[in-house]
Image (cartoon, rainbow, N blue to C red; front, side, top):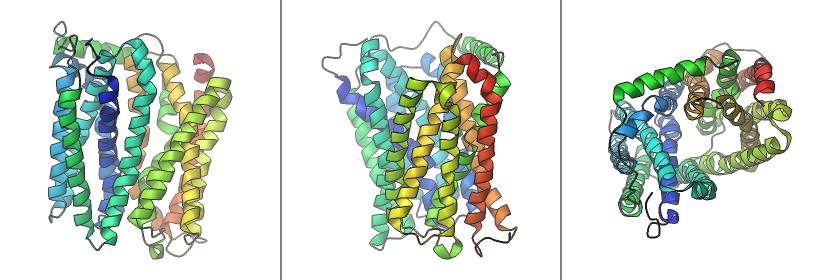
Amino acid sequence: MADLRHNSPWKWIPSLYIAEGIPYCAVNTLPVLFYCELGISIPEITAWTGLLSLPWMIRPFWSPFVDIFSTKRKWTLAMQLLMTVCMLAVALCLPTSFYFASTLSVFACMAFFSATHDIAADGFYMLALSEKQQADFVGIRSTFYKVATVLGQGGLTLLAGWLESRGMAPSGSWAVVFYCLTAVFFCIWLWHTQALPKLADDYPSGATTPSGIIRDFCMTFVTFFKKRHIASALAFMLLFRLPEAMCTKMVAIFMKSPIEDGGLGLSLTEIGFANGTVGVIALLVGGVLGGIAIGNGGLQRWIWPMAASLALPCIVYCLLAIWPNTGFPMICVAVGFEQFGYGFGLTALMMYMIYFARGESETSHYAFCIAFSMAGIMLPGMAAGWVFERLAGLGIDGFSHGNAFEIYFWFVMVCCLTTFAACRIAGPSIREIT
């Protein structure tokens, strides 16, 4: 561990976790909006942007190799510089005629670099700080990651909306957003070249070989699948968030689509405020209160209320699809209510995975749990656009003329049954592990 008197954690922890949060938003949130503006079809948007979250899902498979090649400090700085280059490449590609394929390719690279950066940065955090310091700063790192989420989902969308309101074309406004991101990330990289301490114990793990890591990883994987109640646990991780998974990509498209097409017809500025600011803050508050609830009553007591909290508030999108002219303040209230419920309910899944991973190889098993829970969001999200178009083509009687979004969000409400089914299936394991 290094002497941190001249490299106070306050100098680098806030910026390090902003550097973790912003690329995740840049890859998983912003493309949905600008691809929608630029005329890409809904099935293509949800399928391709959903696939971009794959590197974060499968990062446990290559995280051990970060330990044996170079130092975590060098990995962190290298990934930040590579992400800076990717942001510049997105900005340059957006005004071109081949923007879709080129930006998707760059985003795929950025996703891999960002997932690798998260591995290295989290490892560096644990190396640089004592156990007491880690406990002291865990709230700080979490707070600044959440600040990055608000900036990424809200601030950048607001900037693009402001530029478009001044007459700039969508491709140009989003290019400016990514030029700004490039400048910010270059400054973050430059800052970290000086602020990140050089640690005496930050060195490649010479005692471990790639073949040894692969062998150990396979053994850890096998022991994970030998855990009691593994089938019901996987069902819970994959299905608990299905309603939210079907909403995640479609809500932004619903907000952006014109009212005559069944959407809300919001501007980017309004979307940035409602979804990226009000929604994110409500999500965070819900998560905090969810943690307090489980801390006081336990997971077994709160599992069903949290399942209802996560799933049922999705009905606000059905109501907004029926009454799209309800007004922007009510849209903000609806989004805040739904995201608060999601944040509160998500706590149940996070605590379940912590409990289930306990025992031998706890850290690795928890990483596998995270991977499966992310698959439960990614795979349905990729199919959401295809499902939307199939339902839109049914012409179901009783729904507003042409309002495919209304039909789709009622389908999401049917998906809420899977959340409760997942709780029922996982009931025995919840009673045992808690």
